Length: 319
Image (cartoon, rainbow, N blue to C red; front, side):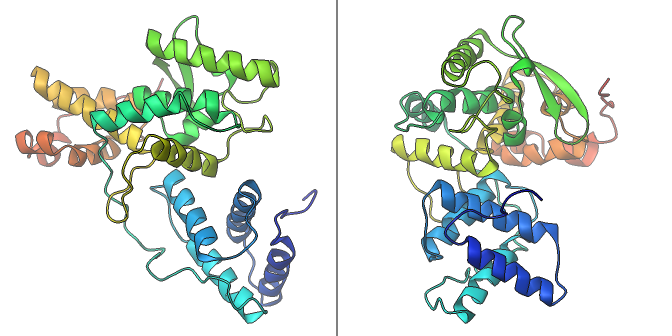
């Protein structure tokens, strides 16, 4: 590996910690990757203490960006905190047991119309010097209008955004395939404004459509940070327990809003789910059924869909 693995004020301690683990025969790229994420977060936010706020803010941002993934990485930052204490930093924070790696996937936070409206009003006036000042509304509008995953929005390249045709080419995150998604005129205008602003600052050769302050691709943690900054600037309420609003909430909203719209229109939802599955890039219809449980109104009218639907839904290909 070229260059240092860590660059924050904790870099020497992180290197010594890994050397200690390796001396005990404990190796693994996952540990290194997680600690590099923590290191980058500390650099981005100028953090210099392994205290509770630093550790739990990083953990929260990582959960926000990877809501459905394994949380085994929590054990690495917890172990690093213990190691810090044993090696002289008595105030180092050891991640509380309330943050467990075996937590079940949290129930989705269902965004209201008012929250969405206030969020995007704030996103267009975000007070920051970073590119999120002009790209925040575009990034989250794509998630909201197309149901994108955060990683799919982050990985869009300029050539994947065809404003002339009103189409985006999204690399399917579950495999080396892509899907073309139409975008509305309103979203085209938002993306065009974002593209012009980014070109003015970074030129025509940026690797991804959405970029960091240095012109590099947006990191996963940055999405959660930007989301919370917009949420706070909009004056929306904080939720200290239970369901939490996160960037992925826009993807959840896209799914259940379509399901409820079809139900209200009298459309055969059973027949429409394969199209929703394909549009959202699900590997199987089983993933799409998850969103049925996010819509209480839908469940009251279609309680038997999960029980009977799998046998009659047609397969949808990804040609």
